[in-house]
Image 1 (cartoon, rainbow, N blue to C red):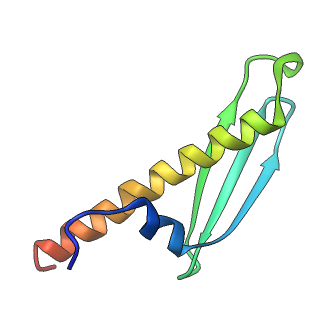
Image 2: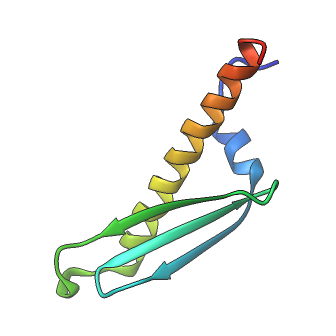
Length: 83
């Protein structure tokens, strides 16, 4: 059993990635995992005048990916502890 969570592992369990612009300043990324669970990430800017879709999607994805990293770390810790 590996004792670390890798970027490759995380990428392998993501089956879908969708972006939604929910307001003039808010972008949400929804990652669907192979078990059907979803993880979200958000990004927001101060003003609609400074909104950039590419930047918003990148930051929202990074935030969702970081959440997934934490969740998978928790799962691994439980496995290593025998739970």
